[in-house]
Length: 296
Length: 191
Image: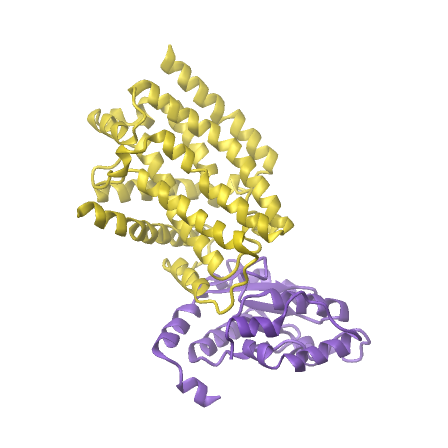
């Protein structure tokens, strides 16, 4: 019964958290730019407005389907990532499964944007997949490194191991090289500023979102809100010792997200090739050296 | 008009209360008025306080801000852009050029009155309006949405023949816009 309640309410809970985090990030960036900024619930207004649009132009069957695939892929990932109090699905899917299904949203977006036949959208998708090659390899290597030390690929067991070791057992403290590599890769995964090549409003008119309006964009914003929480949770579970209770969890989310958007607020945007080159020059060697430390 | 306002259901009133807090703006800046927009968006006047954000594509935008004059060529692009926007959409005419031609009154190539070609929700008078005037007109638009009076976009679906006639008269021929307005109005049940 408890599990059923979690399954029903977890998406809503993470959506609310993610939406407030996005609103907080807009306020935070506004304050850094010495503006007053929107209210913290602004993203709720945005999503409500998009969902209540009167016309929603669809470009075809695949366009409709791919938006659902985008949201579905994110929800699927969300269930496999353990949060405090709920790790029912974590026993059925380990980190290898999470690594696979993290790619579903990107592929869903590629299908839908392909149907709209907008050149800006196609460029955005090619950039998104290019960045995926950039940040995914360091991130997967840190996964592998952790599996090698602890002889398990289950994320739930990794949390247990870290919490047993106390503060010194945290992944970021015991394996700093892997932790830093994954932190930079996480910035790329969230699409925050130095690696914001996929959206790039000034160059390619928000890339994949160019032809999305009304409910399509609304669902994409819901997906984005949930996916940032899920991606930050993966990092917390691997490197910040998981979370014992919800207070601990929200505090870690808040601190990690603030650190990432502080970088986002003051940086410009890399070119696509520079972003991928950076990912393969800094985090990738760090992750490889970290794994070499583990092996020898 | 008054009857329509009183006939709003509770859901429509709540919807208007929430939707007015989020307006995304597409700025069509061929005229000189574009220079007044950066201060409106940045630290001095900061229109994001009201939930108004600049957007880059017509599909996502709610407000189409036309700054300054339109020539025959640019008017065609404005009509194309306007028809791509999703339905509750509001055109704001910026500066006296969009109202009556302004200082281009005697020009052979510019449009005089914007609302003959697309329905305009609010105008900002002046040559050129200061950022305060832009913020004031956006607040007026927000209040209009709240009261349920910002329905000019329905005019384009219901009186499409009027606008199409004016467009074709100006372009001296049929205009090809890739959008079937009457079919859209029937599909999405816009009255």
